[in-house]
Length: 241
Image: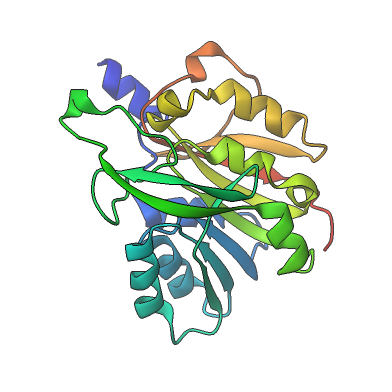
């Protein structure tokens, strides 16, 4: 009953359907995205679904795992509107270690997650380049307005958001995941709540549920639910690029 009650609230529902995630993220009236960021692209399923819905959409895919970068290049190499960026995104630039249970794993994280209780050993390591998104937005995107940002980077979504700097006010919709990975990165939903509230932009937070979007107008401790759940942050008045 506890799991059922959580699920109908969208808690633990977030990783079930890319199609539903994209449908809700792009369901604002008159919203036709022209520029999107897929941060944590993995093998490109989210990007592929975006492309199928919006043939003219320009997409920048950020993925640090070398095996997945090769897969993305093979999959989208002929699409001039999809740009693969072989980097992780965080609040500082440099280099770090990417930890995972296997090469190309969707569980890969900048944290060495402790998943022994699931029988998963996080012993695979590789070097990864890290960038701040504000630098990319300034130098590559030329400070353009961004319609959609999707973030699924295994517990480091908050760090990446902090690296957006001034770019945060120029984004219309941000989709991010929160769940068990945040135990390992020691971040809480409260941190996200205050980040968006103090961002200087007019964001509202919404949980993705089986019934659509559920706005979260106030923070409560019951929002700290560590099973993969997707959220949307919607900017009512994004700044022009």
